[in-house]
Length: 67
Picture 1 (cartoon, rainbow, N blue to C red):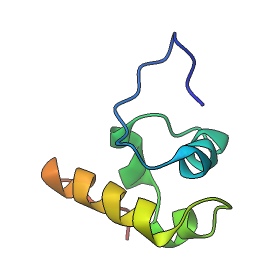
Picture 2: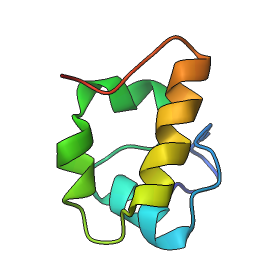
Picture 3: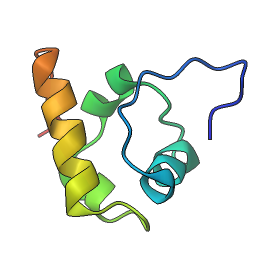
Picture 4: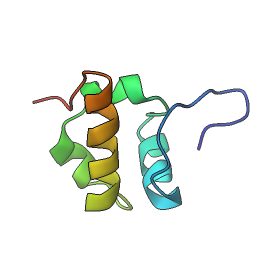
């Protein structure tokens, strides 16, 4: 998880999904387009609800998952 020194703009997706992203070095929304949805779906703790929230947050910024 991000420390107080690291800013995060990820939406609230639940602790397991947040830990899964932190485990692969993702702490900011703008890092997600570097990853595919399938890659994130395979992470332990990342479920369909979290993926949907992330997909919507990316779309709101005109971004999308890789591929």
